[in-house]
Picture 1 (tube, one colour):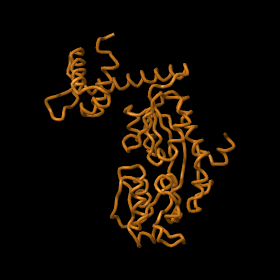
Picture 2: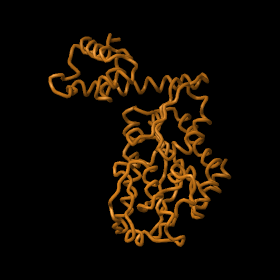
Picture 3: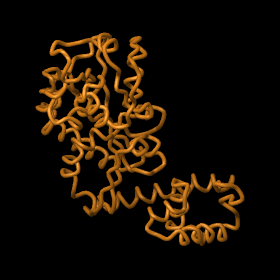
Picture 4: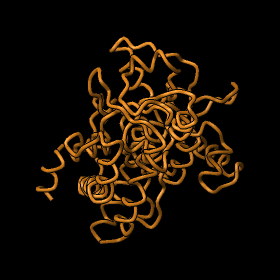
Length: 328
């Protein structure tokens, strides 16, 4: 085997590329910046070719560096799969489980999921930023699994397991009429509090508004659901949300007015997505635990939101609530 075929050296190289910054790469790896720089220099010396072009700022991969990065990423991924398979077969803890969860799921169902699966990993890394809950994060091996509404998974060969489908509804300030109002009426009365257009959630809401020719006043755009619903609670405007988003961000639904979407129903699906080459049994285990956490811990809360969301409007694991209940 070639002297440079060292998994640690490959890990340092791949991390420095992913972070695009040696200081951040060093922090992530628990090394000094000089150690990261020296490791990459030694790797280039062993190969006998330059991987990084340091004559430009910021430094960029050479043509060989790009090819080497892709190969190293694949090799490290296969090594991790082997490690997981051996550990699971020997009933050992995984050293680290990295999972991305959309924020509303991470803050509500997430703790119940981690508690149910606590014994499978010695260390957990739960990430909920936009970049960490994307299919791209999975493909780049920055996470091992994602629970996400990112529907770009249909472009790739991945394992995709449905977790939960929930409806969208209108959320208006507490000062609004208790009688349901339409989105058209609210568009005339007050601004829409928008979610960041860079989020999957925000794009889905924008698509809905466009599809139904709704033109709300656009004055406010915020990057967290807490901030969006805080603005609604303060009477500044209205928004469109889902049960998990409301449960995450609002102590009591009585603080808000919740109306159905009168134009047409809309829902979002949360999937567990994994590399197809990952341990299939582990994927199924995580998906099942997530589904059961929703079924046992959240259905009563969801069903009580404004009296609008009944169990018939929800799907768990691709099944109706009654079908899922019979299935388990």
